[in-house]
Length: 585
Image (cartoon, rainbow, N blue to C red; front, side, top):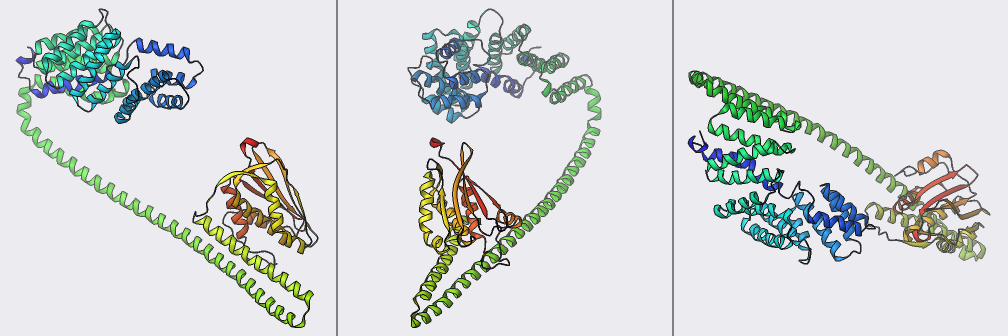
């Protein structure tokens, strides 16, 4: 019995069309042989052998690797290329974005293509597809018709069948059946006589068209034809589709045995990854077949089955409810434990930060208090000396006051810069710096302190070295390190600044003194992040360590590194590594 003799409902028709109709539209413009456009691209590739990005873009385009296509087409667009090559790149991008479901961006890319582009009918066709995806079928038809006209003018027969299919499907959505039939029949008639995937799809499309209108005799004829033709092609997906069509047709006709045979054939052709899911569908059809043979037995057992189903459903929902309660309890307990751990970590971190803050304030306030007290005591002596008019002692006290004031100023200056670094308020602007000139400036600033301790200063930095750093932060680093070198040097000592080459992209700046040096334990503490040193046994020399911590952070911000080499009573080497300016590297 045919479809219209089986009391078939609208729902049965929709089931078939939902599975078959929409995917077929999506497959248009895919899996075709070489067409005019592809040949033109290959010709373009041969003329642009030096354009590697274009070659890669078209390679990934035909491989349907859309992300790679987008990357290399954009790289090609960013270079100086001719207008025609730009049109191809924008087409690659628009097509790839459409495939990725980014329809708005796809429309923008197609909008960049000029109508003078030789294959602009492909652009119109793609824009029509974008409107179709938005279910704007009238707008889609406008662009498909434009594409049809342009294709016929260019005689590109490889594209015209897809256009006819697309137009027919849009008319079908608009319930304009006469126009839809006209274009779908054109598609069938234009297909080559040899059996291809396009021929099979065309027959399925026209079958769907008749099926939508309940013209089941015509529809079944084309479904059968598509099924027979699919035997001569190698596309397993299409074979599976035609077999599935026949299964649904036979199911609606009430022949469950044949439907089951077609269903099993479709399942055999299905990709192995989906076979497990389809087992239930096969089981469902086997059940229908069994039900059709044993309807009387089922009627007798209906009441019992309903009771069992009710009991089973009750148990099922009770189990689901219990599972949800248990899952919710476990989740809430896990969140509670997680939040407790987070709070504990935050508390520990806060305690650590508070301890560091308290330590910093304690040490800084102690040093400032010591400096102010020393300045107060020295000023008292200065007043007494003025009365005795002892000018040598007066000069010594003035120099001492200046030293104390400079030390307090340096401490406050370091504290200010450290605070600005922690709160990310310090502005960094990297530029090319002539290192030798900066060392000269630092030497000039510290000339009085060097003379006071009769320290020899040697600037052996190469005059050809330029480094790429922030100038202000570099000066802060060099001032702190020179100040430390003077502080830790004995009278008549020597401080040297020199460079060495260990890496073509970086320059090593060494600050060497022959002062009191330091132990390996002290070096380890100084190089540890966020380590503030308290006063050691020699309280006149060892301070907070804030200056060196500030230097480490600023060196790191300038993409540099700091190393320390030192021995007790043998002096210290501070080794700073900064990136060179590339143009001078």
